[in-house]
Length: 182
Image 1: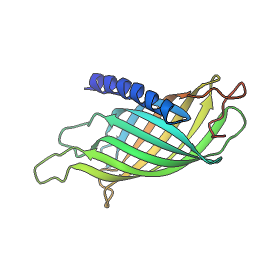
Image 2: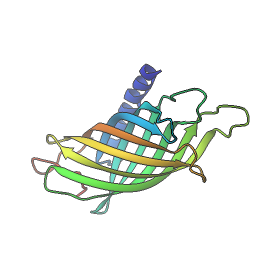
Image 3: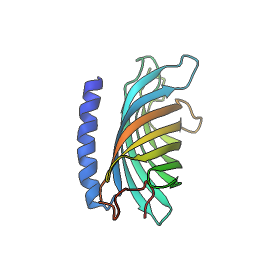
């Protein structure tokens, strides 16, 4: 299952990067990590995400993201995939570190456990916090945490913890890039 997720993530990254270059995107991130599900059992699953950043004015970003994960058990009602948009506010700390926080909404696919279960596509609200770290001119690392609530009752809530490789699409006008838009 994870192999098909990995192949899908690579294909999605290629499509996202090609589309992003045409749409004046600032950067693309391919991330992987753990999706930790709410509840007392502490279950988690591997997940991958593709995220594309677009600058908004001089002090904000809009990030479009998609992520997929394995479901830990077939008997558990859990989110398999999420498509969301977030508004993020970066806080540049020099040339290398850019912490950020954000909030957003989207849709998530909840697996159906039984015929009486209301699985399928549900609304998602999310909050994130993380840091972008410059490594080279156009490359960086992103460490990110996202909390999501599913539906109006926040059933199926989960937290994603990821580390990703960020590629800035346009060469910066100086030797290093900042995570914040210009």
